[in-house]
Length: 297
Image 1 (cartoon, rainbow, N blue to C red):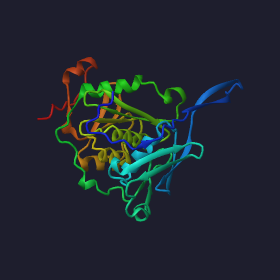
Image 2 (cartoon, rainbow, N blue to C red):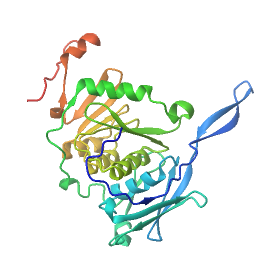
Image 3 (cartoon, helix red, strand yellow):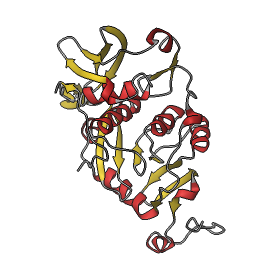
Image 4 (spheres, rainbow, N blue to C red):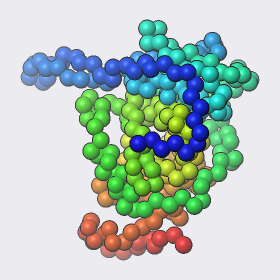
């Protein structure tokens, strides 16, 4: 299913998948006892070249990819070729990363931390707007309205921890034709997007024509990470924040929120979405006074 776009370099990786749910005994309002599944949550302390960097709270479904994506999206490691190995050991809830040449100025670069609005309190090092002006997304990428509907329907029918146990966020990466490439769930959407960034690195996959979907809000952190991954389209079944919208407009990203059924709201990057008026015949008449934008020139 994954189609690499670039030659792949593979660091040495452990394969430390953890159990994603656990069963607990509960009583309902009538004092009836039953057993339910709840998401697992565990700490994963990241050590880079024997230096403790951060502790991530995670389901543990893709810890190696999460670690790589975190280092990538924090701009601490520029290329996967700079990583020699990623070894996760759940017996001590830690992951050891060995880099080829170390991280330059690591003390200074990790001194400033911003606590974000991500579930489980995500954090980023340095200024949120660092390097935004240097990001250039594909100007030729286009997304058809029918593909938006295909993506939303794929997520609706996707087997997930959320359907089994709730309390998690899901993120997915799709091709421009709506093919599901990756689907990751975690206790916070910031972890799920980092894991996908790590998987893209491992598979040598570019983001130029890809579509990113999240069940959570499109905050500034999510938009910035999507932009750093080179992805021109971000979709959410939830909404966006003012800063997320501002960053999307600044980098030229297409932002679609409230994606549910046949409904969505296009907030930024209108020139990339190809509207298909014939699809409206299948969804009923539009509200009076609503104008339908035509396809981009």
